[in-house]
Length: 236
Figure 1: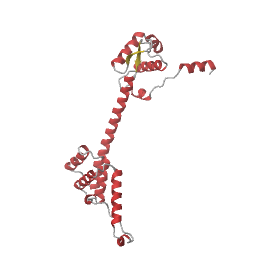
Figure 2 (figure 1 turned 180 degrees about the vertical axis):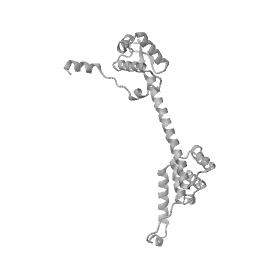
Figure 3 (figure 1 turned 60 degrees about the vertical axis):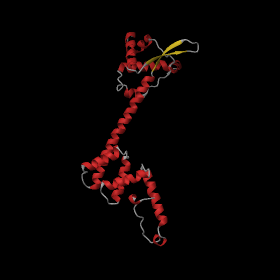
Figure 4 (figure 1 turned 90 degrees about the vertical axis):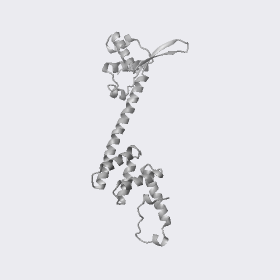
């Protein structure tokens, strides 16, 4: 590349195109031609031309000015493009194209997509929770048990992880019924325990308290085991 060509290349500037726009433009109802027009408008705006002439846009896209005008009208109707009027320092009014509505639409779409993905993950996690109970209990859950677990999730808003921890504590205590699990969850709720870290910290605190209260003569016995934390008999 010779010096003059490189200089012309650099003077032309660059336009950055969002990958999100390229991936999602069809989902917000844009056609291929409308996408190209948006890219052309962004190119003009990036170079400081905020309200390019339709003739210039038409030349770039090799279409008529009427088609450009119609396409701009359609984008405004779809609420992804707007024309704003501002006053300069001399008090004169100037029109300019704005793509703010487009970026807002894409941001909203991303947020909705994220919520849908989270909802799908939550559903899969809840399905796994029911399978986990059946595996630990060694039987199929009854309709009442399924309803109870559903109430923990939907009404009590217990996280799936917390219910799994309560199930684990019940299994360690060799108690295979939902009433026991429910009492563990209620105990944790009274203590404002809502996460795995909080459960582990509370269990550690309990073990430390037990260790300090153990009879010294008993504590010195070799092989003495620290008992499991009985959450239902914890009044501390």
